[in-house]
Length: 615
Image (cartoon, rainbow, N blue to C red):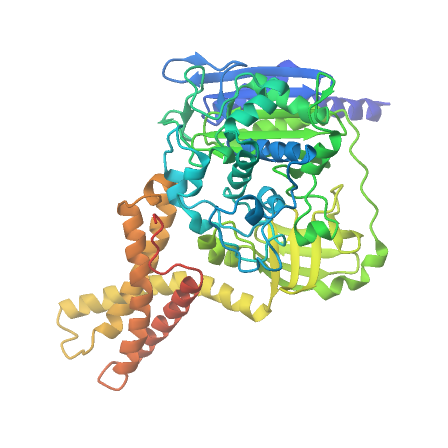
C-alpha cells in the first residue's frame, strides 16, 4: 500500500510540473514567462478547436518604447504563412474551370521570363510553383533587400531579378523552397481574373473567412512594432518586393478565423468556401518523385507536415525581419493554433509552440503507429551508402550543404539506420510500404528511397529535400579537407610569423623567391576573410549583402583573391623548385598551395569565385 501511495504521489507530481490542458491560466503564465526569458516583447495567440476559439489574445507589448500592450486586434507580420492564399486562389479558379494546376507556366504567363532546360519533356507547371518543385533558386539578396512601394505591381516586381527563375534540375522531381514560385502563381491569378491579386484575396478569402483586418500593405494603425532578437532594437517596416510570398499583416482574431477555416475543412459558418477535398489537396504533396512514389508527408500546396510528439500537424510558418509566425492544426483531433511574435527570436517561438501543442493534445490518444512491412526489409541493402544534399534552396549554398548535409544509410535487418549531422546523430527507420520508411516512434512515413532514377539513387526526407548517393571516397575527401584546412591555415600563419621575424633580424638574407612562402599565407588570409565576412555579416545579411556595401565588396574581393593566390602559390612553387629555396620550406609551401587550390576549385564549382552577391 505504501508503495502504491508513493507511485501515485510521483505521478501527481509529474502532472503538476506540466500544466494540464484545462488549465488555460497556467498556459497564459507559461507564454508570458517564455517571452520574458527570451527578451521578446509580445505575441499574438490564437488557439482554436473545431467547435470554436479557446484563447485569442495578445500577450506582452506591441510597442516597447510606448508601453502599448498587444491585444487580440494587434496586427503582426505572418511572413511566408501568406503563401497559402496563392494556393487557395488557384484552387478556387481550378474549381471554377478557369485553369488547371497542371497547366504549364508558359501557356499561362508567356510574357514572364524564366528558363527551363527540360521544357520539352518536363515543363514548369502551376503545381510546381506552389509545391516548390520548379528547381528555381530562392530570391536573391537584392530582391530580399529591395523596399518595394505599395504602388508597385506584381508584374514589375517579377521583372526585378528574373535570373533566379532558372530550373537547376528537372521540374517536378525535387523539393527546394523558393520564394519566387508563389508570386508567379499570384501573377497567373491576375492574368486569369483581371484583378490585382491582393484585391482578389481580400474579396474572396479575407472577408468571407472573417479576417477583417488582414492586409498585404503597411497598416496605418494598430500594428506591432518589430524588433531584433534583443527585444529592444526596432526594425523598420519591411516592404516586401514579392508581396504574395510573405507580406500579410494579421491579428490574433484574424488568425483564429483562418485556423477554423482549415479545421472545418473549408467551411465558414457551415457554408463551404472551398470543398473539403481542396483542403486535403493542399495538405498532400504530389509533384516530387517521392510524392509520386507515395510519400504523403512533406510540402503540399503552401501547406506542409510537421511531426511532433507522435502527431502529424499541417500548416506553415513564416518569418520577416523582426517577426516570426507558426500556424499548425491537426484535423483529426480538431485542434489548431497560430502564434506570432514581434521579434526574430526563434527559441521564443519554438517554446511557445511546444507549450501550445502540449496543451492541445495532452489528454488525447496518439495515432497508432503503422505496422512495419517485413517484405520490404530485404531490398533495403540496395540503398546502403553515402548521400549528400542535392536540392539546395540557394545555389550559393549548394557547396556548403553538400559538406554539412551528408547522410549515411545502412540497413540492419530491422530497417535502415540513418546517420547525419543535420539530425544530430543516428535515426532508425522501418519500412511501412515498399520504399517508404518511418521513424520507429512516428506515425507516418517521412523517408522515400528513390532509384534508380535518371539522376542515380536518390532519397528524400519529407521536409529536408533530396539527397543523392555519392562515392564514399568523395565524402572521405571532403571530410579530410574540412578537417585539414583550419589547422593548415593556422600553421601557415605561425610559419609566416617565424620567417618574418627571422627576416627582420637578418637570418634570411640569402633566401630567394619569397613569393613561394607569401602566396600560401595570403591565400589562407583570403579564405579566412571569406568565412569571417559571411559569418559576421549574416547578422544583418539583407542590408549588408543585398546592395553594394563594404561587406559585399569585401566578399567580392576575397572570393576573387582566394583562387588567384592559391593557384599562384602552386605556380610559383613549381617555377622555383630548383632555384635555391629551402627544401622543407618548399615542400611545406607547395603542399599548402595544392590543398588551398583544391579548396578553391571546390569553391569555384559552386559559384564562389568573384561573388557579386548584390547583383
